[in-house]
Amino acid sequence: MRRITRWYGANPLHLLALLACFALAGYAAFQLVPSRPEGIAVWFVGAVVGHDLVLMPLYSIADRSVLAALRHRAPSMPSVPWINYLRVPVGLSLLLLLVWFPLILRLNTRYQDSTNLSPDPFLWHWLAVTGALFLLSAIAYALRLRAARRSRSPRRSSS
Amino acid sequence: MSEGKKPRPGEPARPGRPARLARLVMPEEPPPGPFRRSFWRSPVRGPWLTSVLGLVLLGGISVLFATGLLSYASYNPDLGGVNDYTPGKGLLGFYLFSWPSDPDWLYRLNQGVHVTLGLALVPILLAKLWSVLPRLFEWPLMRSPAHALERISLFLLVGGGVFEFATGIINIQQWYVFPGSFYTLHFYGAWVFTAAFVVHACLKAPTVVRALRRRGLRRELRVDTAHTVPESPEVSSLVSTAPAAPTISRRGVLGFAGAGGLLLAGLAAGQSIGGPLRRTALLAPHGQVTGSGPQDFQINVTADEAGVKSPVTGDGWRLVLAAAPAGTAGTAAGTAKPVSLTMAQLLAMPQHTVSLAINCVEGWSSGNQVWTGVRLSDLARLAGAEPPGNVYVESLQEHGGHAILSQGQVMNPDSLLAFRVNGAELSLDHGYPARVIMPAAPGVHQIKWVTKMTFGS
Image (cartoon, rainbow over all chains, first blue to last red):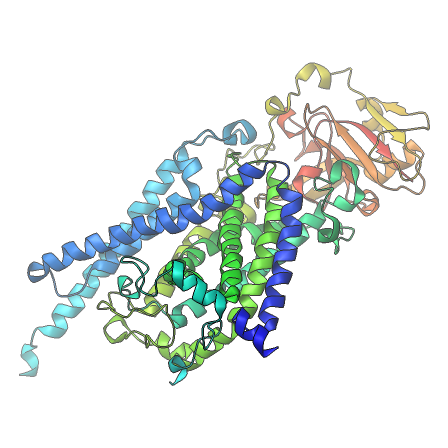
């Protein structure tokens, strides 16, 4: 037993759990794959590659670039860090776009034919929500900035 | 913590033969770039953040799984025939039961939760995947057979997870680009994902417990950005060995992801809740209000799309009622002489009025409307099916537009073949001349443009 554990690299229960996982996944996949195996494989691999090697590097690079630009201009910037007041509205807006892009970008969906509803409002709704997010973020930042200035400037009454 | 000094689980104390073999192909020193731990700079990445996000997903995805299984059962696939889009389900249909026809809000609640929660979990999933990205570039690629197998299961986990979320989100926008029928893909895909999800949750449970004990949940939630410090690089390979200065706290990351979830859900929930709140569903397929007339509520198949044109629904329209021998409903092989009824004859029967909503598998609801028509159980008796069994309903629709309704659905006094809605004759898009309306059932089974009903007994 100890030899198996050493060769395998974990407790035999680990192996049992994984074999059960592969049996169930394989059973389901066997029902799924025969219809269009290459299409399904492209979707599964595409899901991993599209997220891990495209989407995430893109937003990480964008985030680092903004941070680098911020650091470069540091001396002239206000003292309250503003990166999250930019990150949050941009991130939330892109999240909405990521989820609803087929409707927002009016891709070739069956939406109008099926529902008798126009796909036109989605772009405007998204832009309006994005605008509101930036506005809220700007207000929150202005309040933080004011609070920071007040606490820093020596109060005359106290002297 | 002396934990880091001990070999991690899944890492042999002394390399066995496969490890020595692997070392020949794979040098011990990782190549430059993401395979080196120092490449990853975030000071908040580590087991604490991953564990908290993992716990949120554990709860959320369990609810998605349960509501998904219920949604699958609501189609009554075990009645076979046209109801069963997944005849190969085998053991995966082990739990199927006859879907109840009350309370009437049952399916609305189930689908509203499934779809709205699914949307809300998107940013949580993204944050979780961000938090573990260094693991994709682990070096060496395989430490042991255990490690190799676990990485394969992680491929199923990430691939299956993104696949399930993507197919669901794309389907509710009616962008049919996936390789096959959504129903089949989302169902079998869910089982592949669930298999990997359950084993992952079991294998990681001790790590989660350790991470939360080490830092405490509430304690860390009180820490702001200025006081955020990285975890010890010894506790996990997720922790950076060259952390940058913090620009966001751990609670900030959780708040960011949580705000994304609330935003997505808040901009969509109105399509399931209906009423005045429908207007708040700014980013949801069925958030638009088209007017205030009796027929101004949501549909998902127009008469035009269904290929139903007015001549076939005009004066020549007849409702054919047939009785099938027991066990053959769904095959339309009626034996007793069918009864053919005109609209005038149907309107001469006792009319009943119910207030019910059309609730779609896509999560939206039409909100309650007032329907008038004849009871399905009365039609069953007229067809000579006594006591009534299942019924196979056919439509003038060119494709699809048929379903087997269960005995329970037929017998429910609120199940009608409706001719009027909110006081007006049904419009062509709402299924003129007659449509099925019944409580707690998925919208796709509330057949429009009904032409024939074959009752079993």
